Length: 104
Image (tube, rainbow, N blue to C red; front, side):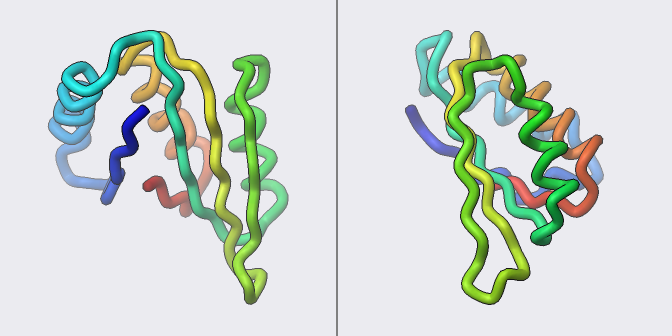
């Protein structure tokens, strides 16, 4: 499993960003494969629950950790994904449904 840094998903050209990500995932990984998502949000239970619900019924292992000052929460999600398109669809779903989420 290889991680990728999702630097700026609000780029003016998200299609190009996702195309590049798909190419990287196809080149580096045999599918289906375990994939690690990592998101950061303000410590707001409703945002955390929204992200968790997006991964409901996928067999995902979800871990959360609150920052030292309690302002932010990191959410790590390990899940088996069938292909790069499925990985990208989850990123899109999270960024569409959870305001202010940061993906790395």
